[in-house]
Every structure is written in structure tokens, then in C-alpha cells.
Amino acid sequence: MEERGTSTIVVYTSGAQCVDCNIVKNWLQEHGYTYTERNIRSEPEALAQLQHLGYSSVPVTVIDELVIDGLDIPALQAAVDHK
Image 1 (cartoon, rainbow, N blue to C red):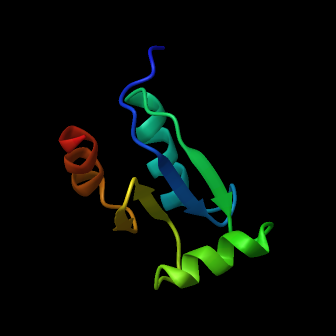
Image 2 (spheres, rainbow, N blue to C red):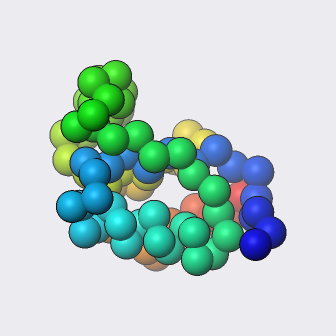
């Protein structure tokens, strides 16, 4: 699959049991976007970064400087279309 875009995408998750997190990750993969997953349960620094952004629940997706809270596929689509 060809990698799309040059944006940096980070998805903050709480692991495989997070249904909404999995939907976000699958959507990105299905549309050809690569991302870095940061698990707030296994990476204390990821939790600290998430809290620094002002969030306490996942998923949170950061595309370059744009932060998308929760399962918001229209916002994800708009963000990647804009890049």
C-alpha cells in the first residue's frame, strides 16, 4: 500500500481492548496513512503527553498540530484532506 501524505500522525490509545481506538487505527490504515500508536497504559510518558494536551481519555489523534478528540471520523477525514 502506498503511504499517503507527509503528516505526522500519533494516536493515543489504551490498548487492544479500546474499541474506538481500534476503529481510528483501522480507518487510518485502510486509507493508507501511517501513524505512531502511544499506549497510555504501558507508556507513562504517553499518558503525561496526553494530559499535557489537556485530555484524559482516548482515543486522541494528533495530526501535525491538530488534535482530534475521540472517535470522530469526519474530523479525521477533514484533517487528512487538508494536508
